[in-house]
Amino acid sequence: MGKLLIQRLIIVLLAAGIFIFPATAAKAQEDTGPAVEQLLSEIGAIPTADKIRELFINTSEWDAEHEELRYISHDALVELGVVVVPTLLEGWLSSVDIRRRIELDNIVKEIGFPAAEYIIPWLENDDPYTRRHAAALLGDTAWINKLEDPMAIGPIDADLNAIEAIKTMLATETEWDVISNAVAALGMFRDPGQIGFLSSYLNNEEEAVRRSAVLGLSKIPDQRVVPEIIKAFDDPVTTVRQTAVLALATPTMGNLAFEALIGGAILSPSGETARLCALESIARYLENIGIERTEIAHSQRFRAYDTAVSIIANPTTSDWLIRGYAVVIIGNSYHPDAAVFLQGLLSREEHPFVVGKINEAISTLEAGMPEPPEDKSTE
Image (tube, rainbow, N blue to C red; front, side, top):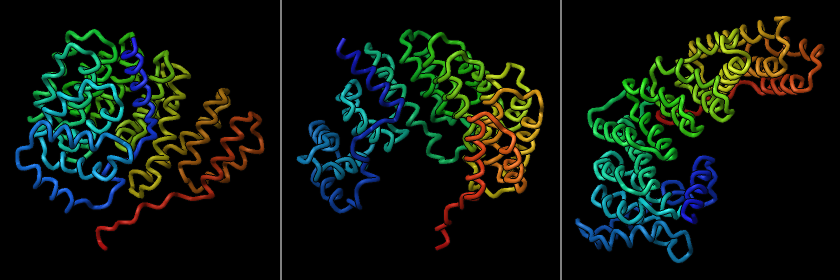
């Protein structure tokens, strides 16, 4: 029972992204190159299992005693590469200690694809927690991640074994939390051939599995995932609908889904809840592309503005939430007529929620579009 409670706590913490622990080496430490080189020379080309375990303890103990060696030990393990993976998996893949879990994940993800062949056998482990952890790591070490291109489409030949292993596990898996992790991980390979397979989990009885199906689909930058994710706008559980909203609000997926979202905002065949989800996705998408100055982004902002104005102007739009999110879209559109329109609307709007959104939108317009980050490549 104690282990189950700890596992559930970890699930909650990981899902919420709530960590108050020290930052990873890459973000918290200056260049440790010379110290790492010295440490590696002492270890030798083929480190013993005991030495690997010692380095890992150094990097996963967050206390003053280990602080001096923590970051160089982390970097040394990454530098050693796949040779350390079997020992790390054997020692800590099943650990429910969150410090070990975070550091193991950080190291294995940095090593990347070569670790996959050692992770796959753990999908057959008797412990559900271990299978869940292994599935997540397989997604995190997908070879396609090396491309650093969010529009790259899979499957990459190097990832085929991992894809097949996850699907084989899912064929017999009965634990909902393992299924949830595996479904989300499968999307990381960005294989359009898995769209139908992942979509089948949108009807799963477990909320977490349906949410993971949305997340998995959202990783595949293919137009065909859009109507599948939009199906989740009708889910009876708010968290699943919100996951779909956020999935279609990213710059990549929002661009692919833009026309479908506009159609759903004007008149959703599924009703007002799905319509509200479409409006929120558009609003969040416009916010996420606020720094973009492309012709496509400009056209989408103006199109969204016209749509939102038509919704508000329609006398049948009585739902205050619909009007409120339409106002948010107007604010994020940065249309030259937006401020005047909102000032006029403010003089006749009575619902406090909508009034609040109007004032927020006016403030957004007054602040102006956010500036794109400086391009330092030419410096």
